[in-house]
Length: 509
Image (cartoon, rainbow, N blue to C red; front, side, top):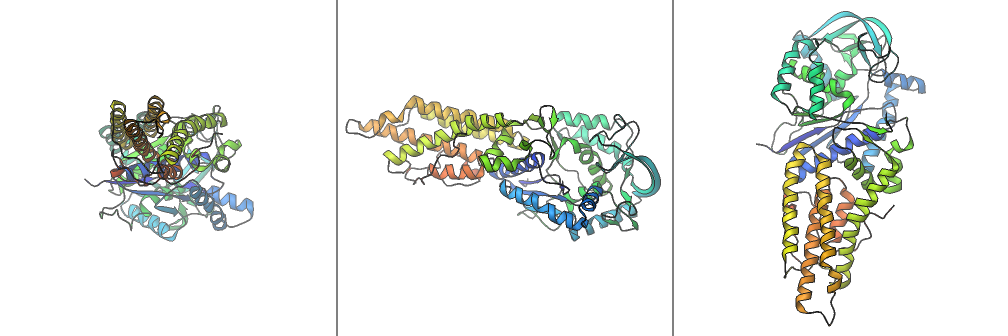
């Protein structure tokens, strides 16, 4: 079986600046991609921007510029933020790219030729914010049930995809693949949604109302519905690429999304794939929202919703760590500056930073800046090795299930064990002096070697989350930064490795 992993984020609208929701999804995708690489997989990570649709057209009109100028100015904000957040994507797609537009038209024509697309007049409530129609029953207090925005009544001719044909196929797939949608309670939501008759999907908009989109190849008076256009990026972006072993990249192993776009990914997208006789993605993982109090944090909210503010004040890796550590995957989480500072000080500054700094300075001062060779191991040392091996096994169990918060909890638990080990064995009581016996010197060497090797495993396992600081920390204890399964073994350090001088990894806030 090939060990390949294809992960995607949603492609983000370019009508405004990126906010914490965008940052969380993309960091989580990056962390998962790195963890799969650490676990021995070849990983391909896709992200990008969604650049068509009515919202973009309206935003451009309000600014007095063309839609193309609008998207050209805004997509770079996402690329700039991803660079600052140390995001290592393999492909950044823009849906205004010519190859993508041609691919969308190719798929539309294929479905039209198979009689999967037809035309009829439609009347209903339309939300500009969500760029979709809603029935009267779906409205909440007369408004769009997703965003709460006003809706308007429209009657117009459009083209429809025969999505209702695939309701039974979707239901069967959900029951035969219980991990298709994660977490499980999100799967239950989709199962409930599919218990009602599935309607056909309107996949066009008249150019008289919306001109900014991919023209239908079989009727130039219409453009493609932005969601139909957007979903196809998961294929169009990788049609000419393969994994190193020659395997095709699509379908995705994991579509990582926010819970608010679950229906489009768990119903619309598989239905389109079914009509094309293509395999479904392996997993659709819907994460929760960051909340301020009981309200979703978005681009229009408090300053805390902008990760750039925290990057400049506290560093990129602190932001990455907090977002991964404080949101249980799939659940909502409350974002506060107080919780950010508390988490950073407790686990990054105290637990990790102090342990690395203490061992680093001790070896520089008393052992000529080289990792000592172990020679007098005792039961405490063996326990640390056994606990490290247990941690590595937990890593191999947790990362394929996308349980990053649980994995971080295990890593921090072992890190605290390292600090307890140092306190118990007190290497500072064995510093070289004329009164020290040879056994004391051997014991000192073994304590510090065991500490370095334990910290090496911790920093290696943290490297997907805090890549810059983990790399620096590894060099401070004489290790070589690397992401490979070979680094997840006890005994990589042999003794004699030279430490590179460095300051505290995470100064206390």
